[in-house]
Length: 388
Image (cartoon, rainbow, N blue to C red; front, side, top):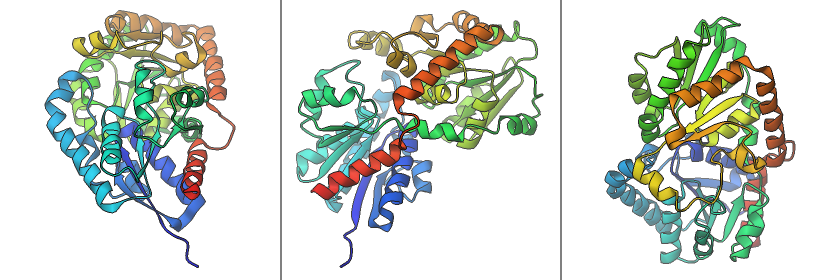
């Protein structure tokens, strides 16, 4: 008797979700082979795993009130397009990945129009950090949450939402870190040259708000660290803006694209200056000492202050409950503050060692050394579908 195919629709809204979606797809194919078929919305990584996206990912990869407001009509059209596709094709499950302001609209609308379609949230919003009331609302339009952290399971279940701990998929990317010496040789960077990785984010708004502060920090640091070289990994949809903004960079600069070069840059770098986001977890698992800075529009920050319930913005600091990695938010994300913290990492071996030890602890908390999180997520998802 032939095995019934499973039609799995995945929807992400930005590059970090695309990477997670690709890992989940690979896990599903490993466990279920040709039994699964995919549809939905993704980027280049998910396309490599066989997804034909309904529309380009950069249509929804925006952040900050100033950027989001003019894009709302286009974003709502994409929400409607994804919802209409789900209603027309009736997949066995719709898995939305990260970007809750976009993906939850999709899940909510699907549930409203056809409650029989199962919906799963992968990388739930950190409602335990702000706006906890959203967990109660999520229980009305999600059937399952694939939780990245163990403490999220009892949190969501308290609000009547089934959850399963699967671990953080970023752990799997740690194995990709390497090739630093080859990257230095290819780019013409001397083996002993001090190298700083700069990661200003993957959204247009982040390039606009954060990259100028990072530029200022590198300008100051270049006067303190002789021979400083910078490598800046970026992604295709903002690469043009990054190159334009970095035309008069204060140090020798190498802009690289692609996942392999990004992880090679982590391996090659002595330290990193990064925007808050998934990349800080990648750096932590690569054991690359870092300083984190983040800045948004004034109105966005003003409104967020009333919603935040955590004292840190960087994931490693949140999980460890202390500032293991220096972080500077909004008015504190100045070139002077960033440069001073980075200078310490280049000149104080004990500060570097302390970060690396904290990063190892962070990895253990995320489930490093256990079954691959994306494989576990795939297994939980398949079990959820089979129980139906």
